[in-house]
Image (tube, rainbow over all chains, first blue to last red; front, side, top):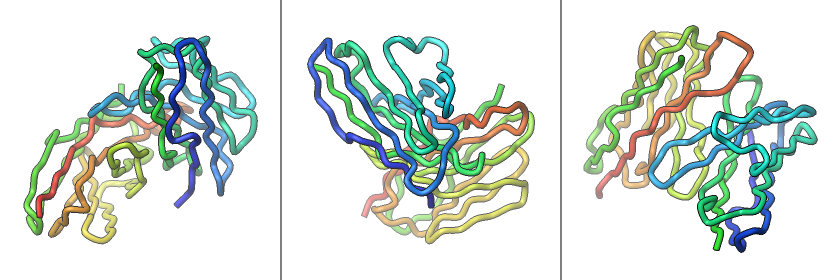
Length: 114
Length: 112
């Protein structure tokens, strides 16, 4: 299957700082990538759809100025959590669509804001 | 609006005790139905794609089937390593969006 690599897998940061998470499709080009947030024992919550070369589309209730998404190439999308606060602590997962069908997921990033 | 409902929410099995997980869905037009396995602290791992009613896919102890309203993930003689959360998702053919709609998942625990 297709491989999506997400980095870092874990990050701890101080309140008020920014954190960047990278999502790469290693063996295919992904015009569309998705960013999800997952709370403990809950399903995936879609945050935004990232399209290469254009602005991301954010889901209702997701602050676009807080969660900056850049999809600069067909293999890389980044999510930057700006001015992080403890309530931003969560598990963030990216996925990339292959052939407009299956979505393949990264390993996830556990963000802890202290 | 697309909807995906998975049942049961949680399932405990003894090793070797076969069972099925259900995924009921409502879409305008089905482009594809996907099954994923998610281990704690990991991203979902792709298992199967089903495109049309009557289609079946198999992988080791897992077999996925599809009807016009639901999909089943059959687990034959499960082992403890099959313990995970199984997610179902659908992709709607209508519109230009490829956003999959996910169910809440079934948490499976297989006891040795």
